[in-house]
Length: 318
Image 1 (spheres, helix red, strand yellow):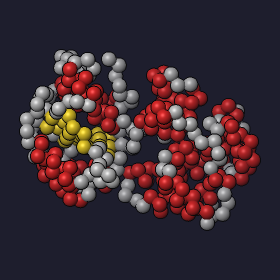
Image 2 (cartoon, rainbow, N blue to C red):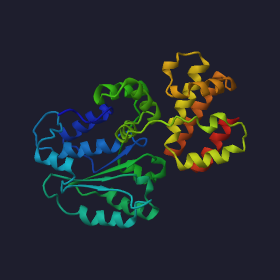
Image 3 (cartoon, rainbow, N blue to C red):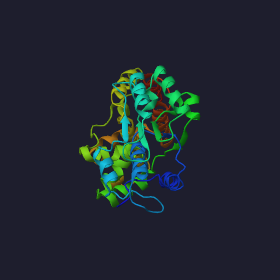
Image 4 (cartoon, rainbow, N blue to C red):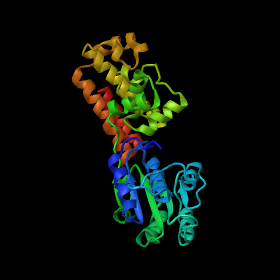
C-alpha cells in the first residue's frame, strides 16, 4: 500500500518507532496550520496501532479488517470528536470521559481524535485536563490544533507535542504533478494559493475550484479609508489571503520583467501591466510578507482577525 501521508516523514517515522517499541503515550498534541495534514496523520497513527499485519517497522497494510474498518469509519475503538457548532463543549468531553474508562472492543487500545481543540471553552478544557492527568492505559488521545497558544500551559504539558510544517511551494507543486497528475501550471497555482498546505490544495482540486480572475480591489485602490471595507470582505473570505499572494507575486514578476508564462493570472495580464508601475520591487516584497505575517497571526494566535486584517490592508494601501 502506498503511504498516504504526503510530507511529515520525520513524524511518521517517529510514530512507527513508537508503535514498534510499544511506548505509545496517553496523549499527543498535533500542532500546525489548517490543512497541513494533522488529521490525516492522526488517522494513520490509529491505523498503525490497530493494523493486524505483523511488519517491522510497523506499517499500515490497508487490507486487514482493522485497516478497512478505519477507512470506512466503522472501527469501534476509534472515535473522532469535533466541535459542536463553534465550540468543543463540556458535554462532549464528559461523554468521552464516560466511554474512555471501558476496555477496547477489538484492538489493544482505544483512540480518540479531538479536532480543533483550540475551540474548547474554558469548562471543557478544565474537564479534559482531568483525563489528560491520568489517561487510562488502554487509551490514546490525539489532540489537533492550529493555535497552540489558545491552550492552557497545563494542557500542553500533559501531551507529547508534534509540530507539523507547511510543504515548500515548489515541492508541493511537484507532488501534485507526480501523485495526482495535475498539470504543472495548475499545480503551481494550487501550491501557491494553498500556502503549502496539502489539505487545502487537494480540497481545491477535488472541488474543481479555480482562482478568481478579477483583479482584487486592494491592488487598485488608493484610498486608505477603503482598508476597513476591504478587511471586512477578507474576514468573510479568509481563504482568499493565500490567493491574494498570487496577485502580488504576479506583479513582482512583471516588475522584474519576467516572462508572462510565469504568471498565475495570465488572463489578467493587461490590467496587471497597467497596475505594476504604481509599485516598487521593495513594496511588492513587503506586501507579500505582510500577507503571510497576517495569515500566520490569525491562524496561530488569539488576535482579533478583523483588527489584524484592517492593519494589513492599511499597510498594503500605504
